[in-house]
Image (cartoon, rainbow, N blue to C red; front, side, top):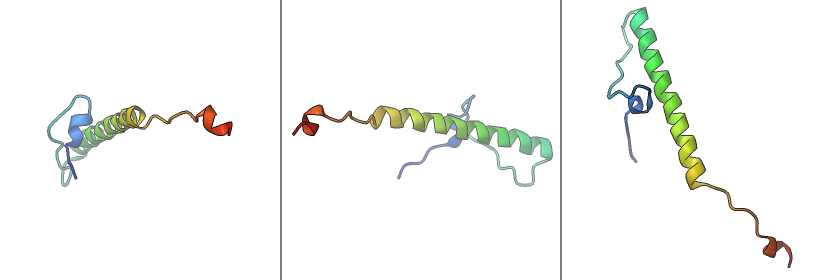
Length: 66
């Protein structure tokens, strides 16, 4: 299994996202935005990878004519 940093998928990319535990409300809001940006970037990346790797093949007309 491979792992990577969620922050690398965000815009701007970042190496770390702080732990919001015991952070003040404003800091927690900024941290949540970083997490959201990372998740959205990851979702976009997954969509691109799936569309490039899993392009469905068109059914063959030869197989249907037998």
